Length: 383
Ligand code: 6AU
Image 1 (cartoon, rainbow, N blue to C red):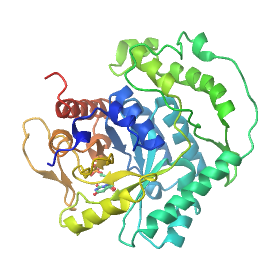
Image 2 (tube, rainbow, N blue to C red):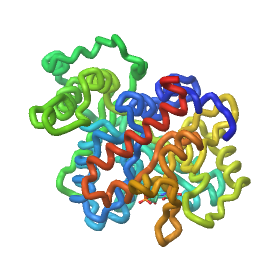
Image 3 (spheres, helix red, strand yellow):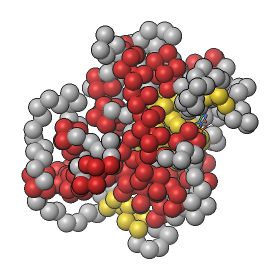
Image 4 (cartoon, rainbow, N blue to C red):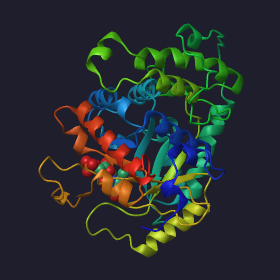
């Protein structure tokens, strides 16, 4: 693996680099605070299962990846519920749409139709097979979604500070290694009005300051030690983590793209030249392209700080360490250590390894720990 500073830098340090966009920066901070580089691939077929999975595993992940088109009963309510859990449990949402059409078509696929992905997913992905205009088209569609959000009507400003009420001082930044976000706008609330329409309740900067208190109150409620959690849960965040999440606030209302540079499946046709072409396209859209779906880090130039997200990840069952894992349909699996420590990937994407486990919550924690250990080994922590 080629050496690059991003391989030995912490997620927190990378969040602060001048080449890091605000959404990538938010994600890197979130990873650093929650100490998780795990993305759950929630490939389930009903809204109820999806929501239950997000509830069960949300504390252990930085990202939840959806395939909304395999959820048979997907409605706006599904998106609303997911956004609410994402807010409460602090993770971002990535719709694995794999756009691959001409610009005009992908814009519609991204913003319209049954799913209206741009409204609720911070991150999505695309193939560059059709050429670089796919990125320009998605970027424009994202910009118009953001613009609509930013110019929308909003109501109600409440000035109470639940942070103080909950004993969490948002100004107390002692021991905080993750720099605070820089005046970011918050995510929308998707207001399901009972019809086939989502209305967005946007907030301006002034309101976003105030609405932090709402967030704090909700989050603190869910992640501060609850009586049952104190007894049963090993993953309840400690007070310092709670404080850092409170300071981080909600994600900025922005959108970002991942380019598929290399797939995990056997016999894929993404040659090294194709991979390089993806990197070239990404470099000319650094504001919008956050990183890649790839099997290795593709950062080579000094200003590269792309985030590599990697599917095809499983932990072998005990006693079978070293075995080459896959499914019967071409999927190929590597361990978190191989992907993060050896290949320089940043986020592991795990689907069936967690979804099919008898105890999904515990399994997600096992993957979280394995991914984090591999990262600490990579940055040389403890040496
Ligand atoms: O862990 P699994 O094998 O159950 O699920 C892997 C998930 C699936 C795939 O659609 C997706 O990751 N995926 C992708 C993505 C994320 O774009 C690319 C790829 O090369 N391989 C892959 O499996 O939801």
